Amino acid sequence: MAYPFLPQITLQVLTFNISGHGQFSAAMQLYKSNAYDDPYIAPPTLQSNETLYVGISLLETHNSTFMVVKRCWGTPERAHDHPRQYPIISDYCRVPDSLGGSVKVMGNGEGRKVKWEGSVFKFIDFQQVWLHCEIRVCFGDDCRPVSSCY
Picture 1: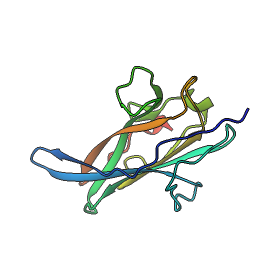
Picture 2 (picture 1 turned 90 degrees about the vertical axis):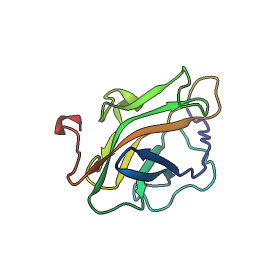
Picture 3 (picture 1 turned 30 degrees about the vertical axis):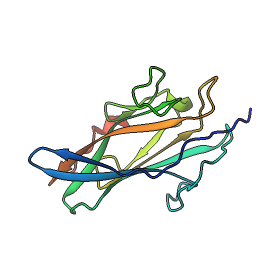
């Protein structure tokens, strides 16, 4: 069954403070392929048999800074705390049955960029999907989650 996937795509750079450690900026983008080199610049219409390719990057950091994705989820509206949520990554690990079991996470905690992919999904009675992720920044050593996650 084909259906449109119409995410709101705007590059929103989030800047956040961690007391005593500094200020960090991160960006999350939806890409056209698993090469992660060509991001969408306008909302695409994706079919049910297609794949989401999501990249999250720390911007303007030092080589000793690492990022780990703690949690990712989808909502049918912009609000990250919307009551209808679809979990994709939880407690640093992919949710096993999420997106039909298709979720793959690459590079989590190994550097300044994390990539994940999974099957296209939608919320019944809604036309849009908003993706959200919570990240953690680490210093000096990698911050990979336990290997049993993946």
